[in-house]
Length: 638
Image 1 (tube, rainbow, N blue to C red):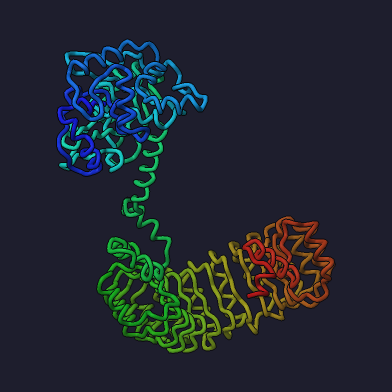
Image 2 (image 1 turned 180 degrees about the vertical axis):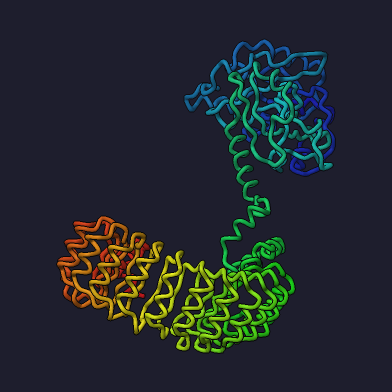
């Protein structure tokens, strides 16, 4: 209606057709009238004819698009100010047709809105010819038509707040900026006649002063995240749609957050849980930032390349040229690596301390000699199952690697007593020595190791042609804790008993595949082994008396493996379970004289003991498979 009183009112219809265009001619309403009237005129409820009839009925001349004078507008304002109730205001503003439709539905005007939330009927405050109108408070539950009757003109009562930096929250002006300082005030475009109202909660009268004095930092944050609401109890609740929009924007902003925003130290910790293969073939291909992280020096200090067939000499050369701080490398089962690659790595990485190369049959003395020459700080060398190694490599290790503590030479068939003795003399700090099936290693090696390496803790001579005359020298090793004497062809009970008496720190003894070990030897072991916790007697010549003696005399043994001992019966298994207070594992695999019913009963009576038989192991395997989600149906279909 304010536009009906404009100076160019006869061009109203042409202007309405261009309403949705971006730029329109300037409207200069002399009334700057209430936008509620504009809403009714431009709404879909009625046409201009209805509006003409309505205003003529109220004594207002000059409708139908004809310009109206200032005196008529003033008279209309004065008449509207005399209305006494919201019902009268609505009847005055609505056309007769709209009023008939509304009352024909049996509803009273504005019945859904509480009366205290409706402003007084004196909506016009005349000051000359300019009229302003306060903004009614939006009420949850009111009709959509009434909710949209919000003044979109500049108003000082709108709450100031820092706008969210999101397109749907901050309405941009045509020049790309926010008018009126970009605050919570209404931004008006004078050219188009449209008003830009930020979606901020409308305060009550009691909270408007407090909100106007608050700092801009109390509003929405610069990242588009929804800020905390004010804690004042008398402030009005925000609009529901405003809160939902802010929440939606918060989720959208969260979607833009990336893992790359984490500190590099945290990302490095995350990547450290990946294997070298996962870092090289997966993580490093994500982006350049991740590639640089995967190249961090801490990931290339301990390098595990075991089982990667892509590893060759060229890769080792590149690693050595770029990462000269490698301290540990594992190239087990890398069949494409040769002596040249390992030698290049050794020459570039003098700080190498641990070298592991199991089952690399293509490697020989050249690689190990290069490691011994260029890496004097070596403390661990595991080169099991390398046929080409000879005593020359061991002599180099004895000459240059005095810090060596752990060496594994199992199934290196070219090694003899000369190499072992040279190694023992040059490496007095040796703590772990494991030999397996070394057919040229005899009692001389055992004697040399016992004399020159007093710190030995782990010794293994499985399958070596060692006799009791050599094993007896191990009694000089006071720190010996693990002794592996499996498959020693000439090993008598007296030697074993003497070793157990002298080596008081012995905690694990493996006597498997020695038919000479009998019940008497096991009884002495149970009595003298004060620190013994593990005793392996697979395929030994023992009976139930050995198990009964263990349960009766030992208070420390926790693991007993008597598998494949044909003379073990139900009596021995039952009595060791009853008498032993420390037993936690009893191996009875292929002890055919032990009934499965007896084992089932023992499992129920002694749940703290794990009994190992064919049936019990199968049951445990199935239970673990079920826990991991396996089912017989899926396995059959697959």
